[in-house]
Image 1 (cartoon, helix red, strand yellow):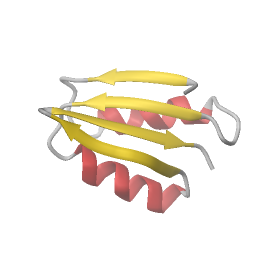
Image 2 (cartoon, rainbow, N blue to C red):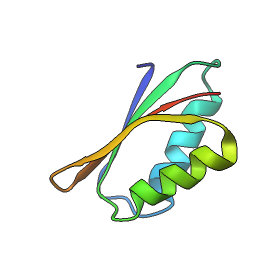
Image 3 (cartoon, helix red, strand yellow):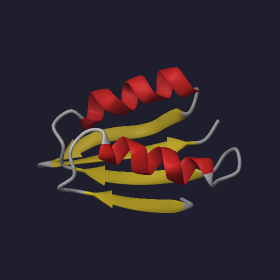
Image 4 (cartoon, helix red, strand yellow):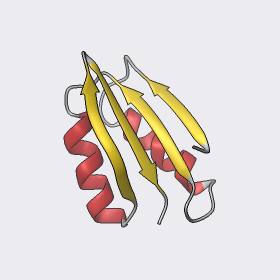
Length: 73
């Protein structure tokens, strides 16, 4: 994992924007782990991956915290 983002407490689209900014700074294959509490985070990251060709390697909820591991295309 190249970067970790704690976006807990932030609302859509902030977790996604932080992830995108982090991915922009990485080389292809770089990874970002995001934690968020926004209820729409899971859907947002799925749509983001489809539109950008980045790959969500893992996404899921641990209680009220969403985790996503995103790899840059």
